[in-house]
Amino acid sequence: MTIDSFPRRIACLTEETVETLYLLGEQDRIVGVSGYTARPPEARRKPKISAFTTAKFEKILAVQPDLVLAFSDLQAEIVRELMRRGVTVFAFNQRSVEEIFDMILVLSRIVGVERKGAELAVRLRAELDAIRASAAGFPTRPRVLFEEWKDPLISGIRWVEELIEVAGGTPVFPELRFGQAAQDRVVDPALVVERAPEVIIASWCGMKVNKAAIRGREGWAAIPAVRNGHIYEIKSTYILQPGPAALTEGVRQLHRILCHVAGVAVPEDLWPNEKTDAGLPHKAPEINSLPGGVAERLPFLSP
Image (cartoon, rainbow, N blue to C red):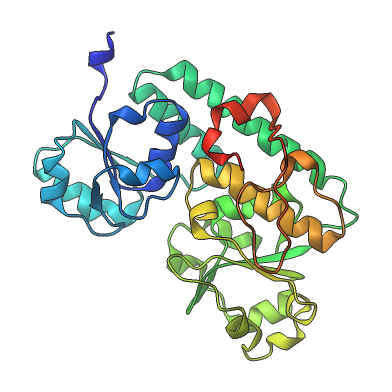
């Protein structure tokens, strides 16, 4: 096969495929992105053609894609309409850490750079292994509530729960991770009091987390995380995108928070590269020495 046998004009309706194509060195194929795209920063110069659950079909067609990449059932109607208009669409639906790796490998094959995809996966796995090894030194594993929305209270999205475990925590609602839809993961706030998380980490997509509102919920003053001031925010672009961001900056920020709670120092080469929660001091490493040469492959993550 020649390079012309693979898609050359790709429109990405979510951020994780954009970031993956940049990491594969195939960013020149991208002709349109979601307006929510933030990683890497230079991707924001690409034409904006969609939001997340809505799209401007004329804008998508105007960039003349030979492939559109979509994600999840929430974009099913967009996919349907594009196919009705004769556009080729590939929709991913990754929910776990392993499925994120599958997405990376499948996308690398779609664009004809399978070897680069395999190399990227190896390096990202090395990142997770390093954090897992660091977390093995915790004296205890803090109980963690990850809050992905506030009203109704939603928790348990699978890849985040798995990354919390990698980073050194114990999710307080492990049974929710297999709930595919958000409505399957709605939590009664009174049950959170019973589960008594020692850490609350919130990421409200498109909205700044209101810690005072979390502290003020009925009965939550008794929760150890609230009582001891362990409520933190991670920006959704780092953790709620099921792609490379979650496997790098997202899990690093989780580990940074849990190291603080556990009273353990963060290894020099595992500090987050972006500014962390305002409640924690930020310390960027002088040299980004990610395992396996990841620094060279993730240049836009360097401080």
